[in-house]
Length: 198
Image (cartoon, rainbow, N blue to C red; front, side, top):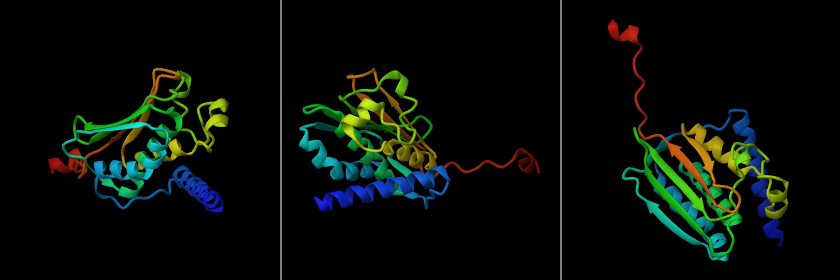
C-alpha cells in the first residue's frame, strides 16, 4: 500500500511539472526519427494489466505504411499511455478499445484511440484538454484523478507540431481521440521570394 501511494504521488508530481513546463513553454524536444507504431505498442504493454483487469477487448489496426515521425519516443509513448489509461478507466467491463493508424494526406500519421465507454457530452468536447478538467464534477468524483492527462497529451502533441482532438456521439456512446503528427523529416523551409529572385 505504501509503495502504491508513493507511485501515485510521484505520478502526480510528474504531471504537475509537465503541465508547468507546457504552460511556460519549457517543454523542449531533441527530435529524432520515431516509429509511432512502436510507441503505441510500448504504451499498450504498460497499460495491458489495467485493460485486462476489466476484460476489455483490445484491437490494433496499425495500417500506416510509414509510421515514422520526428520527436522523442518517450514523450509520444506518454501520449498513448494516457489515452489508453483513459480508455481503460472510462470503459465498463467487457467493453472494447481499438487503436487505428493511417497515413495523413500530405504526409504524416494519424492515430485514433476509440472505446465503447462512458462517452462525452457535446458541451465538454472543447474543454477536455484544459488542465484539471475531468468532464464534469460527477465524472471526477466517480473516476478520480486530477484531470491533467489530456492537457499533457495536448502539450506534447503540439510541441511535436501536431494536434489532438476528441469526438463522441454523447454520453454512453464511447469516444475517439485522434492524434495527428507530421512526417519525418520535416519539409525544408522555402526560401523567401526576394532571395530566390536574386
